Length: 460
Picture 1: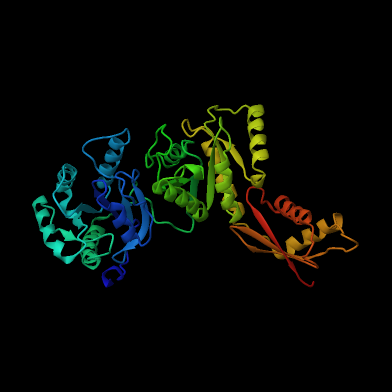
Picture 2: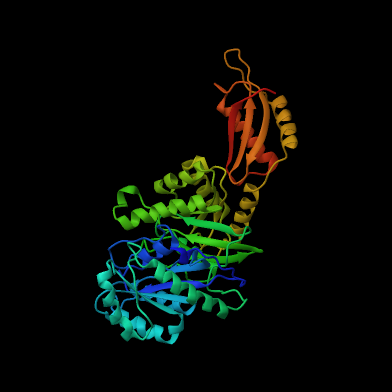
C-alpha cells in the first residue's frame, strides 16, 4: 500500500477535514477504523450505533488530516435522536475538505438518494466509495452508481481492506487539490493540530451526569448530543476550546455503567474507550451528580486512572447556585472524601454545566493541576528538606531495628514519581512513606495531583 506512505508537507495552519458520510449500517465506522489504522469507532450490526461525529487526527495517503466518522443519515426517524443525528451528519459536510460518500453493492436506497442531492453541489470534493465489494466479481456492480453524477465509483471492502491502494491514489489527488483551496486561517469548526502546549481533558462519569453538556459549554458548540435519556453518548467525542492562552482538547466519553448493565457489545466498547481516554488524557474530569453523589462505578473506574498516576479533578455538577452555600458544599465534599479516600488529594469544584456557574473556576483548577503534574523538584533542594523532616520526625523503629532514609530523588513528571533510598526496604513503615509524600505535597506544591513514592534499598 505505497499510496498511503508518501508524505506531503502541509504549509497551512490546519489539517484538511475528511468526512465519511452515508446511511446507517453501510460500513462507515469500519472504513473509519481501516483508514485510521486501529479500532477507534464502534462497529456493530445494529443500525445507528454512531450517533456523534467522531474525529481523530491521522495520516491518510501520507497527508496529515482530521478524519471524521458521522452518524447514519435516515429518511424516517424512529426515536428522538434520529433527527438530531441526521442534522449533525449533514452539517459535517459543510466543513469538509473531502467527503468519502459510502454506499454499498446493491440498489440505492432513499437515504442514498437524499445524500446524493446534498452532495451534488460539492461534487469536486466527493469520492464515491462502493463498499462490500468483497470479491473482484462484484466490482462491475459498482458501475450502477455512475448514475449519481458524483464521478467514478470505487469498489472496496472496508472489512477486508480490498482495493485500498486504489482508493489511496484518488484520495491523495483530491487532498492535494483540497490543500490548494485551504486558506491560512484556522477552521473554527475543526480541531487544530495538537501541539505540546495542548491540554487534553477526558470528561468521565455515570450516564446522564452532564458530561456532554459540559463538553458543549467548554467548546462553545454542540459536538456532543445532549438529552435526558441516559446513555446518549456511546463513543468518545472530541472538541476543542481555548482558555487563558491554552488550547484544550475535550474528550466527552460514554457514561460508565456498572458491569452488570454492560451487556451490549456497543456499551462494552464504549466503557473501554472511556477508560482508555482517561489513560491518554492530561487531566481527567470526574463529573459527579450533586444530588445523587458518587457511584460505585465512578469509584471503580476512576481508581484505574489513579493507579496509573493520572491527575483527576472532580466536578460536582448540577450545582445550580451561582454562589454555593458553604455549609452545604462542605457537607457534600466531606461525604465524597469519606466515600473515596483514594482521591483525598483531588480538587473538587461545584459547577453547573447547564448554567455555566463555576466553569471558569473549574478550568483554573485544571490549569493549576496540569502545572503541578509537570513540576520538577531540584534534587539538592529536595534532600535538604528531607533531612530536616527526618531530624524533626525520625522513622519509627521496629523490634529494636531502626530505619533510615538516605536519599530521595524525583524520577518523573506526569505522573509525579519519587524514589526514596532507605537502609532496609522490608518492613519499612508505610505510614512513614505516606508522611514523606504528604511533606513533599505541602513543601513543593503538589496538593492537586497524585504523588507516588517507591522505596529502594541503597547506600548513602
